[in-house]
Amino acid sequence: MLSFDEFDRQFPTDEACKAYIVAKRWPNGVRCPRCGHSFGNRVYALKKPFTWTCCNVECGGRKGYRFSVTSGTIFQDTKVSLRIWFKIGYLMLTAKKGISSLQVRRVIFGEDSGTDWRTAWYICHRWRCAMRGDAFPLEGEVEADETFIGGKDANRHWDKKSAQRRKADPRGPLDEKIGYGKVEVLGAIQRKGNVVAKVVGGMDAPTLASFVRQTVSDDVTLLATDENPAYRYVSRKLSARHEVVQHGRSEYVRGNVHTNNIENFWSLLKRGVVGTFHNVSKDYLPLYLNEFSFRHNNRQNPDAFGEMVTTCSH
Image: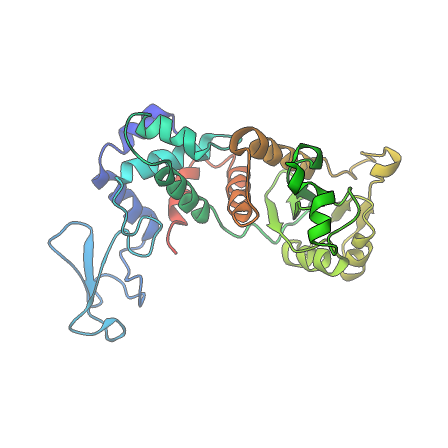
């Protein structure tokens, strides 16, 4: 990963940022984002730098479709300098527990700049949308686990406590261990490899089984989980060796059977939510999972920022 000084020297102007986007987005030459035809195949460069027109039939023929380097990307129609976008993306990528939009505003724009914090918030979320990429199917030794994201019931305002909420919604869960009002998240991690995390609508056996089938390869040598009985349903649908650690009996490691890696990821995610963002709504939680997963999966990638720019197109 580049130091901030090296990063600043590499992207001194918006033109340098645009040239970098071109190199990462179209490594084999410019292509029309609408029809996919390559440069020279009725795709022509215009006098204005980093703009082209496509005159293929799919794009209107002679009238053509005009596009730029930012068309169809998270930067499209932005009025903010691309240098600012790049700096914010760099800060998000290098902050192990994330960086809040308020902190971004203070660091990038300054307290007295007059820039609304919503600008920083919008840019951060656009980057989180770009921090995607299928890291599955996972292979080798894999751990699967579930967690709940949300504050403690005792710390909530009186009208948001579980007792009050149940009066309004009697169908809500009664078991405090489930976590009334919390968001269910499933995760799987390949040891010394990638992690996949997803917001789900429940923790029933079919949901867990569907998640495992999507994320875990048939070639795994071990699937390690806790004693959640729903995973028994998973083991019937998976040909891999399935081992369980009995946390309820204070068993956490048995040979190579444990869920410590995925629990470490949950711990980092929750420390980010509590210590950095303070509050994350259910609607935006998938984007934060994108961010933490992408950062984990590219922790040893020297071109992690380039990988993030590569995925910035819609």
